[in-house]
Length: 352
Image 1 (cartoon, rainbow, N blue to C red):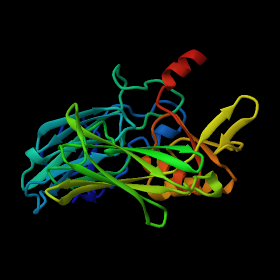
Image 2: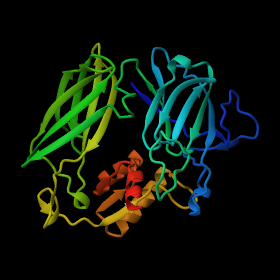
Image 3: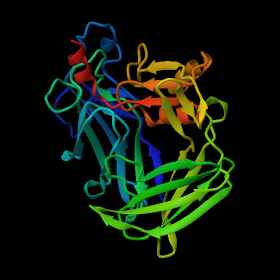
Image 4: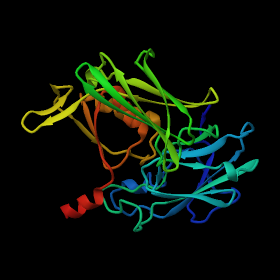
């Protein structure tokens, strides 16, 4: 079964644009999340450092690796990253707001040095490049190690969690489409649980080849569905997917979801589950004074408490993908979310 280990501690940082193969004296020891623009990126002068910096961390090869695979998961690196393991370049990622994962298995030694060159400099490849906010540089969200069996739910498909849930409410029932992606043609069992952990419905199926993965699709019905009612009752179900190989569960993933209907009327406004629901809320960026974009989970929680304290029921997450942790908080606390992709450059150009 998969194991997840937080990998935020004992990193080293330096403003340099070349890799290292050993950690030299003088490198700053840091804990992630981290940005090098926590101070100069917040004075409004638009003269903050934009360039390449180096992050490094040494670690031992897991003793129980066997036939398993070891991935490193980056939840956010701004704005592009070059990944090196033991001096060898093994991965490139461009885009500052999305999760990505790297399979390190084939490059591991007993003792390893992971080196990440991070660049937030001006270029013609990574979007956006012009806006009214800071393009913070750094490994500014959590990093995790994922130890999985060789047969597992997909980890390299565009940074997705390997499971997608789409509920459709019809009266008192909900039809829930669950899609999973895995790296092997094998049986998948999907089970939906209610908020109290009671099983609602379960189904099993075999995946169909799709590109380099296998996709399994399920249609499950929830009778007498408990609706997600915003701040009044943010009720969430759980969908759990299990990958079965030789009658054993080799991997398991899960996600939460709410069943609801959202509609707009040009004259009457927004409706949640068929009832008028005036939207009152705030716009949020993922930064704060003295910290920049490198928010901890505690800081995300504090932001949510502030939003709740003013009586808001809606939050606009501008102008890019925010930390998945905050989306989860919005579901838990009943916040309607206006989510955006980073299309700010075109907006600024039109305004100007």
